[in-house]
Image 1 (cartoon, rainbow, N blue to C red):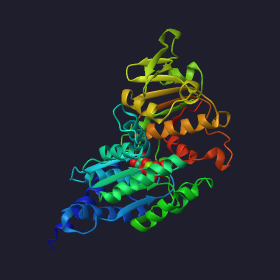
Image 2: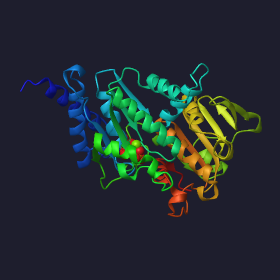
Image 3: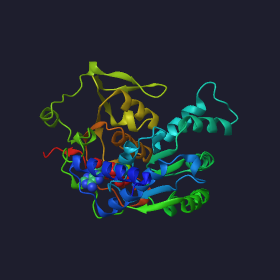
Image 4: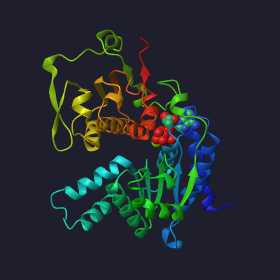
Length: 358
Ligand SMILES: Nc1ncnc2c1ncn2[C@@H]1O[C@H](COP(=O)(O)OP(=O)(O)OP(=O)(O)O)[C@@H](O)[C@H]1O
Ligand SMILES: [Mg+2]
């Protein structure tokens, strides 16, 4: 009865239920099952590593958008008392590896530069929480395979979330075969938890309520025109407010900077060669990002659409308030996979923004 494993397991279970109660959530059945598994993992991680021949088994939590996967793994992460833990979002992973490899002084024999960047990223952690695990091209496949090998070597337990079941990762038939060895490894090493429930919680929650007080959920989708802006206390930037904003390794033009708010035209941010490291840099400097002249995404270029989807991912993960002005970006999207790749995630996130009724 006095098993110390039980003590850690119970503490984590309690932490989940208290966190859910504070936000007014009732957990879905699939989430309850995941809570049990994560509570057990917390207890396993609390044992001294040297007392067991193998590290605790990895966990792969997957399901459609908005099922509370990030909530589950973030709550688990917060509840772990041991500080030997790391949390990464998909986009951080690639930025940090890229920065590590390209930093002056990094070794340039390719392989060891990636390895030392990974070393730095993982530190002395025993558990890595990796939110939003997906892969779309050969470069992703290589880096993720390398991550897996390093985690194995260093006996680090991986807890990850994904919108794809393992076999569905890297959906592009052109690259899928490159990822098959990693898929095999995932299926062998990881306990796969399916949290597919009937509800996308983002669409269920009334905008700006019930979302755990997140800034992202206070974002707006506005039609163009002074009236809509007036109604929310915003004014169109004057020409004299135009400025440049430092992002990753350079500067980009903004229509205005007002304190912790930055205002961009869609084209300057999404139709030029910006990338996730730039959006992460913006999220570090600002709390509100206004994106003006948003077109229906169907009219944007394929790169523009992908950048917009990445921007929304970063804004949601980093809790940045987004104010979109223009057309409904998701209007009339066809169902063709080549156009909508990852846009179901974008749609679920944008459902949290408040829409002007006019
Ligand atoms: N049981 C619940 N009841 C109500 N809201 C919930 C519940 N669980 C999570 N949420 C909230 O629902 C929203 C979506 O959850 P979360 O971001 O964890 O989804 P996700 O499964 O990670 O989605 P995605 O695949 O798009 O990343 C968040 O605001 C979260 O706080
Ligand atoms: Mg998520």
